Image 1 (cartoon, rainbow, N blue to C red):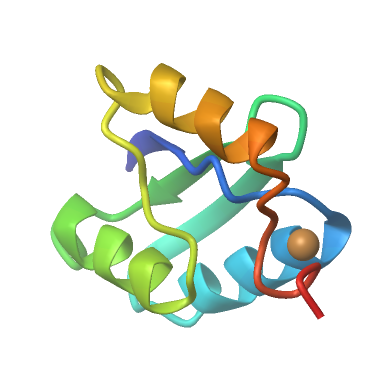
Image 2 (cartoon, rainbow, N blue to C red; image 1 turned 180 degrees about the vertical axis):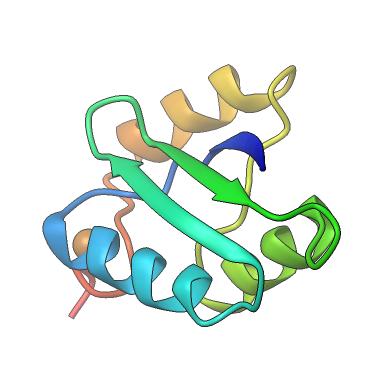
Amino acid sequence: MSQVTFNVPSISCGHCVRTIRAALGEIAGVQQVDVDIDTKQVAVVYDAAVVGEAQMKDVLAEADYPVADASAAQPEVLTLVEAGASCGCCRI
Ligand SMILES: [Cu+2]
């Protein structure tokens, strides 16, 4: 089993957690999904023979939770927070 952690700055409420869990949980090969609202990180345990990181990133992007590049994440997160931006389910 392999494990990967994604930075997803747009996580902002329990609804986001459920959406992400459901989206990733539908992928074959994904064993476990842990979403941390405080750190805005998604930890996935998966079978690398069945699914890859690129596919999980695609699914997150389609669900409106794009994965941030670790090196570029900080300035972008600050800007989003300052602008009052939020996730799709909180934007209603
Ligand atoms: Cu939300």
